[in-house]
Length: 321
Image 1 (cartoon, rainbow, N blue to C red):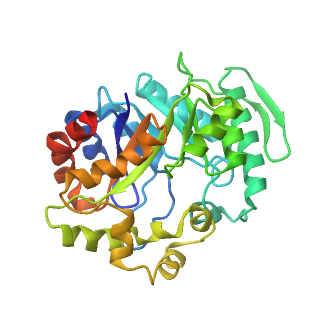
Image 2: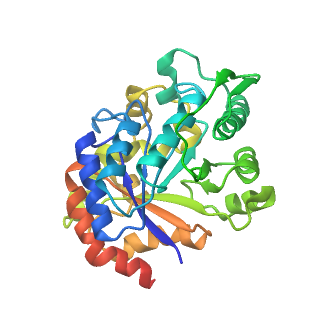
């Protein structure tokens, strides 16, 4: 049975709203939640980007049932993996075992801010492999000294550890990342409904492990308004991740998406009140073998309206389908 989740999208909402939306999503019956971990929004029109680890600590205390995960954290440049090992362990304790750590090779948008440059994708994958090894070693509870190609530790130790480690998910988009995820991760994460990603994940050791997808939607009773809002705030999505991972800031995303038309966005994102269109978009992931699908509602001011509609119409339709 596929589980359906809610996205806490920090690029379009401030920290207090994100916590309130998480509470509402739990009450509405969403099965899980995911939270983005960015330093910048993709577009200035989105207007937010709070520190997700503070938000998750608050979500852990404000909710009772709903599991949640980062979607995704990059532990290779802006963060040292030792910091992420400590942060994830703390959130797992605060949530009483409801947290999963989603990791990925990152985007230039968020990582360039510390001045460490932006390496090529092959290097980023090698760095991610090393970072995951560091995190696992620190979760052993022992003092760890590590001398890797990219990361070093000097007698590091995470003092507050949960009884059960957070599961680790790894974001994938091609053969290298699928191999890494299948070998080291507890789950696969992807934003494209491609069955071949799951097949490569399985071949690398991922058989039987969850795969978590994400799909953007824009609910509004006025379909025209939904298209306008999706174009205003989500037209960056049209570039695809191979392009988007390389762009350095909101101005670059605005320039790259300046010729994307509202009708182009509407082809990719279901807009308006038609339940079937939303169900069809989600079931592209279900049909591709994803066990979990998180929904992103476009527009900060429309989250509560979307959550209420999802509770009454969308979630029942998804589960029936």
